[in-house]
View 1: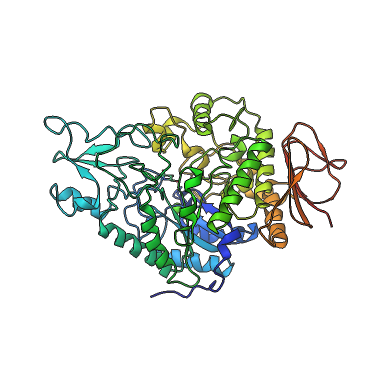
View 2: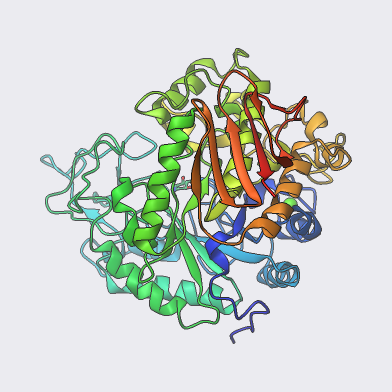
Amino acid sequence: MTRKNQLAGDAHWWRNAVVYQIYPRSFADANGDGIGDLAGIISRVDYLANLGIDAVWMSPFYPSALADGGYDVDDYMDIDPRIGTLDQFDELVQRLHEKSIRVFVDVVPNHSSDRHEWFKQALAAAPGSPERERYIFRDGRGENGELPPSDLASHFGPEGWTRVPDGQWYMHLFTKEQPDFNWDNPQVEEYFLKTLRFWSDRGVDGFRIDVAHALKKNLSPLPDRDSYALSVMKDDGTDPLFDRDEVHEVYRGWRKVFNEYDPPRVAVAEAWVHPHRRPPYASEEGLGQAFNFDLLASGWDAAQFKSVISDNLAMSVETGSSSTWVLSNHDVIRHATRFAIPGYGLSPDSFDLENQWYVQHRMDHDLDLAAGLARAKAATLLMFALPGSSYIYQGEELGLHDVVDIPSDQMQDPQWFRGEGKFKSRDGCRVPLPWESSGSSFGFGPGGSHLPQPEWYANVAVAVQEGDSKSTLSLYRQALKLRRELYQSDELEWLDLGPGVLGFRRSADWICVTNFSHEPVEIASKVLISSTEIVDGLLQPNSTAWLSSL
Ligand code: NOJ
Ligand code: CA
């Protein structure tokens, strides 16, 4: 049965939506087992409504052994019993819709988990069987097939092939618990259409598509690859593993399903592709929107911000979609900490720098955390002034830093364990949220916390910030309220305010100025909101203000 969506009618709601990402296991825990759950989210619906967001996106809540934080899905049409039930999911959607908050769920189509029914059937069946054809099984090389079919590394290292007892190997771009689907098999295609309908029928408004650029592959010859850096990926649609032109046929089929609903369901692609290859993912015939992670890779630098913004706005004109903006998510160091890393973003490959810093210095305290937080608030206020939609990540509204001193034996992220020390752990941004300044898990729940919380959480908990009009939480709330009032069109006009100062006008009563320089800047117009206090008419370094010329 298809449930009536209470928010039917507005087909364009997503164009400038502010979407709040919930990492369900770390948001709020109602039953005290240390793992966040749907009942916990339900208990915090008022908090989400007061924040002033338009939608939530929930990272995977499906049954999973958590080999990769839930991105290893056992069953795409169910909820992990530790997280809740389908009835609770329905209740959550209804409660959010009552507050006019839409709901995105995460779809992981490139791979399932090795506990998925189909993979179990594939293992039980013989080589060459139809059951194996839903995944990518091959014979090995060497006299007895003892060598992997090709020299393929996985994203998280080390190898991208794993051998099964009868001697065949299966391919996995991520962990060995995440076998890749064979997207040339129509059964796989049908299965995902069914999945999209399953959630759409339950009233879900949109989908975030995991590694949307990886589904279609050219496996003859089998690719060898030891790096997944963007610089290695071909940018003309002929790369054997990623961003092949055929992937858009899949999304054209998905679009037909989205358009069966009122309002049409929407989707946003997680596609780490060359920027000029992004438009088709965001097109109206495709998923409709694509993440642009360019701000994530930018250093604290006016010129970089300006070129990222103008390039992406130009691209949104080309696609007819709106641009997306992201500063933090569950895969990267929180932006308050990132902007405290000396030199971040100023090298050609920022992600390398991030990894290097994390691996070499994570126990050091040589960061200017206060400057990092000031820059993060300024960057967020700038982002909220941009045309398009902003995706924010739970906890950034509290100005949280990454937790950099989680003991290795308490980490969970496969990227840390399998990367042989080459990649950072993503656990630092996945630590359960602090709601209260005391208690066994800072109000996360009545019990403990599945990742250790730091002592400094006491100072940044929701309860502390709620009563403080100058807190980061208050800044987010006030900014999102103002944004609703001020946002009238997608127009943006750059202002020339000198080196290190970035300014643009959205309308006569909405000007945004960010001071990236080391000197204070004089402000002549009326200040609507600012990320740090304006003293004597001066906008301090590492700060943003919204002004009105009226
Ligand atoms: C991207 C997700 O954001 C990340 O958390 C996950 O590890 C990979 N895709 C694999 O699903
Ligand atoms: Ca729980």
